[in-house]
Length: 345
Ligand SMILES: [Zn+2]
Image 1 (cartoon, helix red, strand yellow):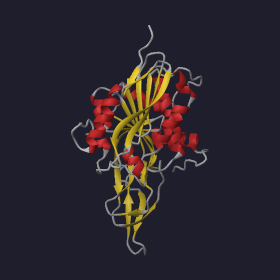
Image 2 (cartoon, protein in one colour; image 1 turned 90 degrees about the vertical axis):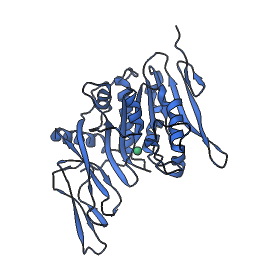
Image 3 (cartoon, helix red, strand yellow; image 1 turned 120 degrees about the vertical axis):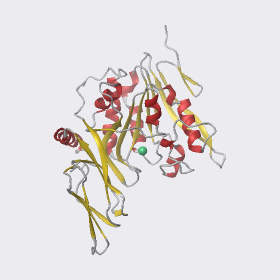
Image 4 (cartoon, helix red, strand yellow; image 1 turned 30 degrees about the vertical axis):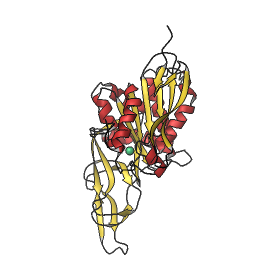
């Protein structure tokens, strides 16, 4: 018996075909309609329904390029199941180069949302009803916030032997942060419904970081292979090693001033180690920023201007720190030859 078509926002996609669908979200006050752009690839054979989405924070654009490359890759042509690719969820913020919605709300704190709530709440409800609720698996693509960059990492709530853990290991980036769920996030909503969700965090807002995009595309394809959506890849090798971090914390500016970092992204640091110096413009007063735990720098500020209390270095703690360090070294050697080279440690 032939497989049923896949229906999204009233559009039916036949098995073995793909379609671009504009899901109406609102009108701008110019009366111009605004859509969430979606591409559905509906395989001939049944399987998981994977949602891959980017720019839920409108200025986090590495994911937009990850989705574009995924859709253009030959690997997805013969997939099993269904891929729902959404390059830009927060279309309002994307147009404005902003993380937020026009009402300054963070869309990733608005789930599950409601049709009668704030703008953020309405957009969340629409995205959820029309798109998210169709998915059996989700990969949500993010970057660091503005002026902050992240070492490529997966954030997920892991239960030993669970499907989320298997997806996280399959993705193949060196660090998995076993992070608790934030109320109102897409991850919180979906995980609460038993849908395994990965958040991929890599690079900086408003940038295309090749060392974040390339492993992101490969990671999504590896997850698709691990959940049985892709079987055609001849080079089926085990994913690169990844280590789980069980906690993390930010080292913050101790005074207002100008930052000179002393470590790079990916550096292994010891508790009390100097991470950076913050000084006034004359250098009369200097404050030290030190690591508050042994760990690895998985995120940091790229802006040398800091106010007291500002988060500057994100240090993740590992039980197996040696293994984490070597996973990062392997990752570095896989991606350092890129045109814009990865420059860790
Ligand atoms: Zn984000």
